Image (tube, rainbow, N blue to C red):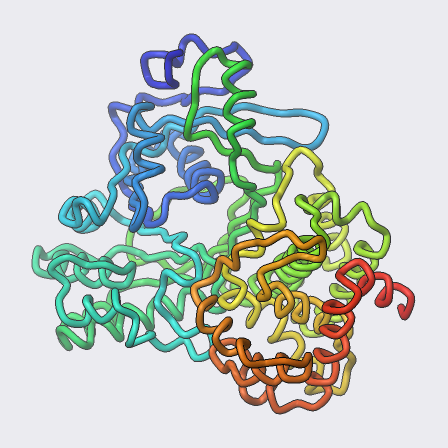
Length: 490
């Protein structure tokens, strides 16, 4: 059967939205590092909007820093793919044409460097996950013993990390007399712009102090907050779309109607006239904090408790009254630690989040959300825990969510099913827990793991007691019993 491509666009059903611009006239003003499903359903759709509005500077060169999978999905399709937007009762199919080509960096690092150093490139966006920045999640410093970072500190001739590519390309731009690009982290890092800037400047300083000064003076690293639920595409999704289209699309993505991108208005070059879903602001931090602690914090709690109970999807977990009560209580706790901007109505935001979580057509998998917990939970759960303990407030829901992550490290759910602990620190955490026999010893081992738990929090007796209590219930009775206990006490 034919693949989606420029040649087969006219064979699609009439209700499918197609690019409204001449792709042959598009220039690539954006390079994106980490071209996964989230980027294709979020930033790429926004740049596609700019192209549809007539500004043809905003095509995308996508880059994978690891896998060939996305390149192999998209190259036979001329970079085209379907974005399915599902709200539970309807579905809209739109073909996104913004991505012009995809580079696999380990195969051809020079091609990526040339794209980053091109005079057409004005913006570089990143979705490389928290671990891709090579930063200690607790301190924000470069992880200097990371093998890839060690290589980039030694030489940037063939970069291996995202900061390495940025520094090498910025050096090329400086040498060519070009201005720097605006680099925008779209990952769920706290203060992501400042952290990306710090990583780039720190690495640049190891190679060229003059380059470091040039980047610091002329570059731009806006803070940003992104929000859209994008579940992993399954084989069943591809098969269903094939039946609908009569054409195969191996690069399709599925998502929800909601889309938000809050960007600090700090650019060092051109930017599109951003449209719907994008908000430029002087201060991103309050938006970022609300999203991390409400949406992402609840998602993590749902993922670990639901995953331990053997439940596959978010909406299935929230069908349980006790799980719904847990999420509401977690939001009650986290909300007291926020300083929301005037434009953000927290009550309305919470209602909207619950409706998004309830969307059954997304089929957002708990195990997808459970990945990389060591990188995510410091900002999602531990930061609000520290804030509440500092003002003498309770932490019952937040600590239950964190205890569920600790339980997840055992690699087996309450039904006896084995799961992979997909986390960059999985081996180190497992080693730290290996000799722990009792629940108290396991809690003590986790609290000593300062790459995740800040020492000031690890020494807090109330936090330790809450973890011991919840982990005991999780280990002896299971996640559903823990939720029932929590519900009975609230």
